Structures are given as C-alpha cells and as structure tokens.
Length: 116
Image (cartoon, rainbow, N blue to C red):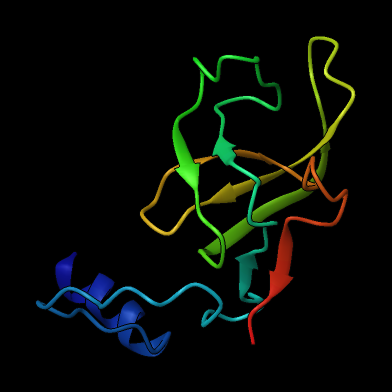
C-alpha cells in the first residue's frame, strides 16, 4: 500500500520533504496582493473579532499600526448588530485575524494601500 501511495505522489509531482517549508511573506503567494495600513497621524485603529466596535474598545484584539503590512481576507464587509460602517477582514503582521474599519474615521479615506 505504501509503495502504491508513493508511486501516486511521484506521478503527481509531489514530494515528501523531511524539512518544514519556510513561510511566505504576505503578498508573495500566487494571487495575493500586498497591502499596508494607511492612517492619519491622529487616528488609532484596532482589530476586532467581529465587524462592530464599542466606544471603550473593550472587544479589541490588538492595535493596528500605520504602514503595517497585512493580508486582506475580505473587503467591504458590512457591520453587524446595528453598526452601519464598512469593515475589512484581515490578518495582521503577527497572525491575528479580525476586522478593521475600511475608512479612517478622521479623514474618511481608505485604511488600506497597495505596498510600494
């Protein structure tokens, strides 16, 4: 049985490697586009577990920083539970997954930019 499976893997050009593969940088994978956060100097942006925030930020997962490189999972997600703002689902630079506001509340400009 093992020989049979190995022959199938070889015919499909798969390899069995004893060493782990290195992680790719965000934007380097096939079909990915590099994005960074763009914030006005006076803006504070947080990552939330759901597309809704509260004034005291008690549900925030982590702060998001200007020029931080992120992975965009879904764009233009509507808010929930009465939140009428637009959100982006992202994975931040250290692997936290959640939602950020799609527009900077101070400038009303997009919070995302393409990488330079």
